[in-house]
Length: 282
Image 1 (cartoon, rainbow, N blue to C red):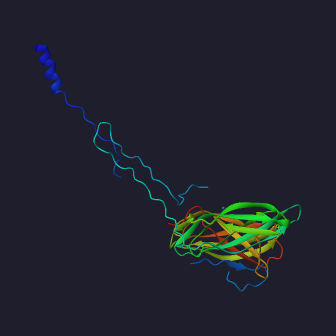
Image 2 (image 1 turned 90 degrees about the vertical axis):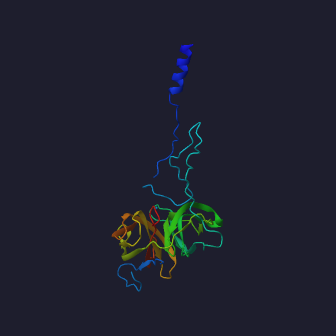
């Protein structure tokens, strides 16, 4: 009898187990630079590191959850709202200003030099990595090849893409931007890049276009594409090529070179454009 009572007393004197909920700890349109080949006066003034990509995403930090047997519901998991895309009618589609090509068939080479110029007419929407389909056709509308490239354009900016594609048998070249509001990202003021001291001259190995970039962008840029677009005396696009600069810090000035081993003939003027690198200005 006394033994049973003793067990009851010991049991009653032991502290009851507790459970602690586990949760997180508080915590202006850019104008292209126009230059004439060397020796002729000009009347005009002179595609990695991983980065944040605009778009839908969900922030998933460690979040609290209720402990079994506890009445604490835990801390709700926070989420990051997707970047909004414009409603139909609230933005203006990108404008394809001009495009063109020249078949190249020399020294065993068989392709077309091409280029296309775009303008973003919006004042509050940047265009971030918009897909652009390019296609080459020959006689009897025979498809000769194509590619999907991407273009990034700040509000009000004019830029370009250029390269080599198709064959020397190309008779028609088509440029089609994506008809999709997803690449349009809200952005108003972010600075710009000024292109100066542009020279484009024929060389022993083709053509070399050089110049300087001065950035007033609010964010440092890396791997920034620089594009040369060639036009004839009538202003028609003959083709183009591209290069880039590895780094362009905000507020800095850097030099660039755009070599082209097989430029089209009859180049009268060369325009130089820039695109953003891996990130939009903040």
